[in-house]
Length: 610
Image 1 (cartoon, rainbow, N blue to C red):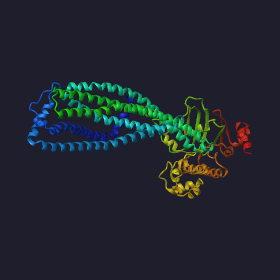
Image 2 (image 1 turned 120 degrees about the vertical axis):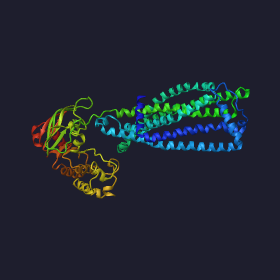
Image 3 (image 1 turned 180 degrees about the horizontal axis):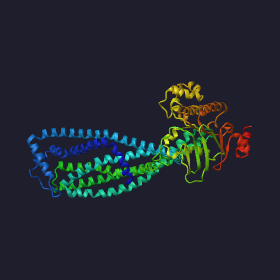
C-alpha cells in the first residue's frame, strides 16, 4: 500500500481538473438516483395505484418508517389534483430530462478526466526520463535498454489506468452504493440486511483474484520488457544479423519470448475477467432472491409494497450491482498498479553515483594542467581496472594513451569528464578536485570524439549544433568545412537540412566521423578527447578525418587513444598502460629507446601492417 500511496501523489498536480471531474461525478450520481426514483410514481400512475391508495397506507414492519406510504400519499395527492394523464406527461418529461442531465454530467466528467489521465502519464514519464539522465554511465552498462523503455512506456500506462480506475470508482461508486443502500434500508431494512450479507463474500473472492493478478501483472511486465529489449538489440544490429544469416535464429528467439508473453497475458486476462462474472452472478442471485421474497409477499398479501414500490426496490437492487461490481474490480486495478509502480520506483529510488558536490564551483576555463594522483578505479567492486595512476597533462599538450586492448585506456579518459568517479585517489584540473566542479561546467570544457560515433535521427545542422542549437548556420558551415564535411553535406538532397537517419545510418563511417568532429569544433572546447577516432575507417576516409582531427587539435589540450601507433608518433607525450598501471611515459623516440612494452607494440603492429 505504501507504493500505491506514492502513486497517488501524482494526482496532486492535476487537482484542478480532478476536482472539476469529481464535481461533475457528484451530479452524475445525483441524477442517476433521481432517474431511478421516477420508477415508482411512473408505475403507480400507469397502473392507477397512486390515486386509489389510502391516505394512511399500510404499515410495513420491515421498514424503519413507512417511506412507501409517505410517497404514496404524496403521489396520490398530486394525481388527485392534476389528473393521471397530466402527471404521466410530466413524469415522462422529468425522466427524459433526468437521463439527459445524467449523461451530460457523465460526459463532462470524462472531459475533465482526460486531462488528468494524460497529465499523470506525462508527469511520470518525464520524471523517469529526467532521472535516467541523472544516473551515471555505469547504470546503463548494467541495465538493458529494452527494460528501461518498457518501464517508461508500458508500466507508466498501467499505473495511469490503476489510478484513474481508483479515482473514478472512489467518487462514483461509494456515493451511489451509499444512497441506494439508504433507500433500500428505508424500504425494508431486514431484507436489505440479508442482501448485503453477501458483500464480504464477494470481497474475499475479489481479493484472492487481485493477489493473483499482481503476480501475473509483474510477470507480464517483465516479459514485455524482454521483448522490447530483443527488438532494440535486433533492429540496432540488423546489419550483423543479415551478415551472419541469423534471421531464423532471431525470429525463433523473438517467437519464444512472444509466446511466453502471450501465455502470461492470456492467464492475466482470464484472471481479470473472472472478477466480473463472479460479481455479476452474485448480483443476479441477490436480485432473484429479492424477486422471490417480495413477489411471494405480494402474492400472499403479506407485503405492503405497491407495484411501483416493488419495481423501484428491484430497480435499485439492479442499479446498485454495477457500482458494487466496479468497486470490487478497482482492488484488482490497485494490485496491477502497485506491481507497475514498484518497477518504476525501483528506477526512481536509485541514487545517482555521479552528482554535484554541495559547494561545487563553476569552471569557465582551463589554465594549467590535468593531474592524476594515485588514481585507482574498479567497476562495482570488481578487480581494479586502473591502479595507482599518476599522470600530468599540461595545457596545450597532445597526450596519447596506448596499450593492449582492455587495459583501461577508455576508462582512464572517461574519468576526466566524470562519466565515472575514481575509486581512490584524485583528479585535478588547475589544482581543483574535479568532484568539486559542477558537472555541467566541467564537461563544457571538453569535446569528445569516439570510434562509435553517436548521431541522432535529425538534420545534419542539428547534429553538428548539438548542445549549441542557437548557433547561426554560418558558424555550422565553418565548422563543417574545417572537418572536411562541407563538400559531402552540400551534395545531400537538402544540404544541412537533410535527415541522416537513426544513428546516421544514411552516412558512411568517414562521413559520420567528420560530422562528430564538426560538432566538437563548433563547441570549441579547450580540452579534446579522441577515443580511437580513426581505427574503423578506410585509407581515404582516414586521411580526410586525420586532417580534420589535426585542425581540431590545433591550440587545444588533446588526449588521444590510438589503436594505430603510427597516428601518435608526433604526440608530445605517449603514456603506456599495462595491467592498470602507467608503465612507460615519453615521446615516441624516447619510448623506442627504452626497449619496453611500447617498442614491442610498435614493432608487432609494424610487422602486421607491413
